[in-house]
Image (cartoon, rainbow, N blue to C red; front, side, top):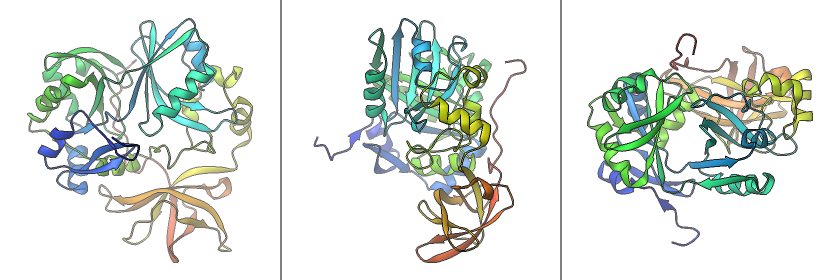
Length: 370
């Protein structure tokens, strides 16, 4: 394999046998669709979709005061995180910009991190450089990762791994699944109830087969994964998030813990706490786009004087709503829902309106008192 050649997923042959169209993504050959993006999108919203996300980085961090050391790099409340609980947080640079967004889970005496596939090598290098020698980082290269998402996901998975349905949103545990041990968390990237399943790469085909043997489950590609997360108002790193964007600009204030706001002590805290108090200059917003044609990433956002004041970062057709939607960064003064803006794409103008997000309501499973 040369530097230019994409790597293959453990399930590469499985995807091809299922009729997947494969494309390069994040350094891997990945399935973009099987039956068609709209059909796969709607199936996930109505039933259960199986996504292969094995390109993502799975990391174990151990050592003295590992939660405190991670808190120096991330704004999330990790010290108070209970065993088996997940938290969405971000790896920040010294200016408060987002190096990556990730999931952090306390598992007994260590932390389990899931980071984005396209950024994982950079994340690992950055954390190894900034964390003390007392914290050891292990990249779990022999682990695969699947996501089962949709309103029927819990019933499907609980039949194969009894007890999974008892997990609350953002909680995980070890289960027996299709003859192997699996770490399963109730989380995901579609806005639907669902689970992420970490298993050894040499066992993932048996797990995938067991899941799709249920008629409620179909394999789903990257195309629908993108349209689902866009409807859910969830940002994609490298598009809606990057090192110039802060958590406050991105509207991710919920990920900055209360204690962290009071104490600071994380990378870029001065800028981020200032933005929390005074507001950021620009913010991420949702857009309803008039007409039928989607407006794509890179389109300009124009003010009333036709000056470009922002950029579309994600855009496409919403299968659930039957209309084009987008996300963009705009000046804070233009961020109020109902504000009318113009978008410019390849010399053509589009009318749009700032819309509340998520575009489609989240349906995460939240237990009373959990």
